[in-house]
Image: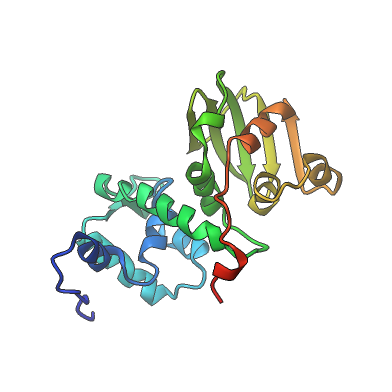
Length: 223
């Protein structure tokens, strides 16, 4: 394996880039932010990273103690990768980068499930959360997430939430269009790309609690 490159600079930012600055490294961290994954799951989330490169990044991040590898007990008996507590501390870093880059984010017709969920946590505006706590079950590409919103907090985790105020089923790009693009909920219902059961006002609460940063002026946009 090739030796890790080093900036040989005493600056903390330079050391951070020594640890997570290689191509795909921070995206591997992003993929693990919501919980452990198998190598095959990481390949699904990062389809443009070759298996060799992905394996190398996992080794490097493990050596840097950003993540660890462990084997699940039977009957699963498969290996998974998960962030260490120190690795979890990178979420605010990813959020800051996400908010900064969102000011010049190009339009896209696709978004991965984990990327969308993390974007909600990134763009959440606590002062818009409302006083009472409401609950949602999001099922995005058949992956369930439980959501609690209110009192200045947005909590999103993997898993089922029986008895949620509303349950929403769709692809992440569909909900992204409603949350970030202003697409009417009824429009997504009418074309069959989204279905929900329960209180639609809770969906509106989520939309109102997420704020994209102001885009860069046209003359400042990257070429």
